Length: 269
Image 1 (cartoon, helix red, strand yellow):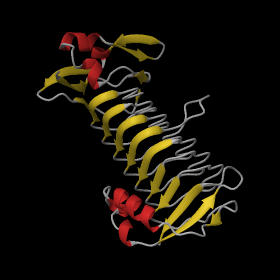
Image 2 (tube, helix red, strand yellow; image 1 turned 135 degrees about the vertical axis):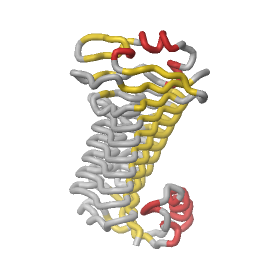
Image 3 (cartoon, helix red, strand yellow; image 1 turned 30 degrees about the vertical axis):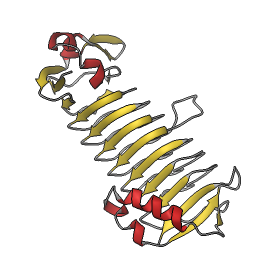
Image 4 (tube, one colour; image 1 turned 120 degrees about the horizontal axis):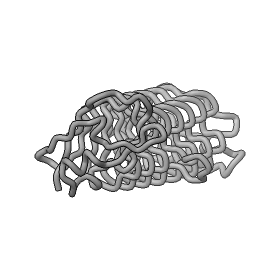
């Protein structure tokens, strides 16, 4: 297996669809074959070599030495290896990932980590709306893996999330954890309006600003010290606003009582 560095030649006139350009898909190819791979440019298919200069690497990583703000579906259905972007990316970064690591040294637009089933997606900057949520027409959101956002996240983060972990260092938008079924979502900053709307199960942890619990959430009667220590130590490994969680007390609310009512709203005090 060999890795590749793809250096930008030119900025595309239209948006480019990079689905299928993953470390495992390119590992057994030579440079000429990589350059011939078709990618969507508007309503046409063009060779990958139109936009990138292909250079071999000494490791098995796939690295885009370019800003991919006009490129969508980076890491789409990625099933292993390591993909790194030295800049921002467009929509659907890491959507339907099953394994491997995708690192974005910039921002990601909407739908980052949608329907992830495994692997790890790291975004150094912000992400747009509907991160770790569902594709249009689907009933299941994120089903596994880990999404780490070191900036802010937009609206509907974790919508219909079923499993996995989402860690956001900054603020999140409206309707965070809406219709959440299971999983863990940790927030280091402030929360927008209508958080936990329709939440059935799962845990949302606030390490930063204290949010107002929705009227359909009620204070928890029982403590959960063992569970909290296990969860807090796991989240503390991410550092930043989560580093001190094991030494902090918590308050818990349960809801959304308008739905299943078994979700947890955990605020570190």
